[in-house]
Amino acid sequence: MTTDPSLEQFGYRQELRRTLSFNDLLIYGLIFMVPIAPFGIFGSVFQASGGMVALAYIIGMVAMAFTAFSYSQMAKAFPMAGSVYTYAGRGIVGPVGFMAGWAMLLDYVLVPALLYLIASLAMASFVPLPVWAWLLVFVVLNTIVNYTGIQMTARVTRYMLIAELIVLAIFILIGLFALIQGKAQTGALTPLFNPDTFSWPLAFGAVSVAVLSFLGFDGISMLAEESKVDSHKIGRSMIAALGLAGALFIVQTWIGALLTPNRSQLLSGGDPNGTAFYDMAEFAGGHWLGILTAVSTAIAWGFANSLVAQAATSRLLYAMARDRQLPAFLAKIHPKNKVPVNATLLVALVSLAVGLFLANREDGIALISSLVNFGAMTAFLALHLSVIVHYFFKKGSRDLWRHLIAPLIGFGILVYVVINASIAAQVVGIVWLAIGLLVLATFFAYGRRPLLAALGESHDAPLK
Image 1 (cartoon, rainbow, N blue to C red):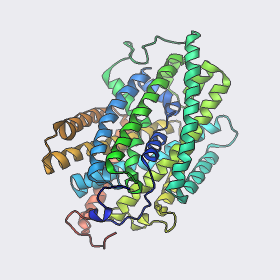
Image 2 (image 1 turned 90 degrees about the vertical axis):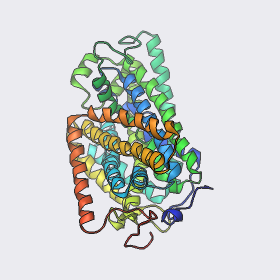
Image 3 (image 1 turned 180 degrees about the horizontal axis):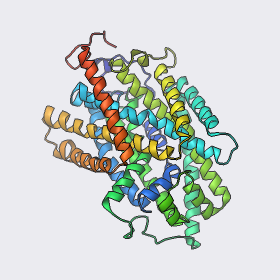
Image 4 (image 1 turned 120 degrees about the vertical axis):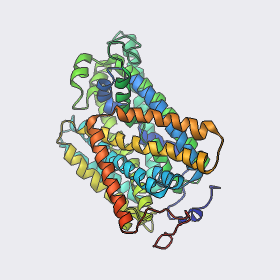
């Protein structure tokens, strides 16, 4: 069992069930990131990066490595649910935590909808059912599993991870064989550097899309109150999941970029139907490989990935609600299954509604991807600042690398990524943050200044 301070010392009761091991956390993070995640957004990253897909993922992994490191530091200080909302609120001050949580909501609430949409489009491309029907199927299945309890979620993700790794191994082997046969469409180093298209703004703009594949390792922090390992291992599981997933992303996108046919068309016209990877797989290994990768993407994104995304999102809503910064009904825990039941159901409804709306837009995937990334990157900026403020200024730490230099580097990289994100994402993201500031101002106006339990200031309500 964990040797960390009890939740009571932070002002909360232990309501969720502690059952997850280090391996459970690692598998959860890998499933959340999806080992075959590039399958679904390959065309978008290819166009955004000028064909330098591997470079985009390498930069993305480096950027996320600093973020994972900062997560590991804050998870040791505050081993509880809420992620950046908790870390910024306790590491800096309550209102900053609220805004960090608000930024994360743009990411977490939209992530399941994005996953359902990509999966439904993939399934509808070869099974004669409309996109809305597939959306409904995926949402209902995942909600049932998450409602059953975190143990069921963990059990299902183990089997899904094994299946995804088998499919990925098949693609890599066949892709390498195709390259040996001479099917490469460009030079071996072009996925890493193409002098005809390279520019730093282009590379980092592509990272703002590619980084979508890495979002998920941070979801491990949401399960801190359901983990039976100490907080040091929670941080290590995040770093391990990021490293393993990053290596897989780079290998598969490098091979895919070498085998992509109709490169000029993809660079100029993009991939509105999200089928670029499946077309490339068919070119490399035949029609069956195209079908296999499409079906695998649908199941991985629509079931496995969205399953854990729904779980993580419900924990964020639960953490904010128990601090009275969201409606109290979202903090309700199922008496038997020990899951935030109302938060889980709300995520399902929002995901279905957003997915159905975006299914009718040609730019649906690109739009929601950029919005998800903007929310995540903004929250990660607050994470890095929370490390510096909590350890370096409040605690007086003189570990310059871990508590000042590394978070500053991570902060700088993410600022550049946010600046080079799409204009639509920037506009919507800024509007979302502005709404959050209005909500925060309303809290102050009505005497409900955001406070977290056991911070030396009391809530009007009794201990949660």
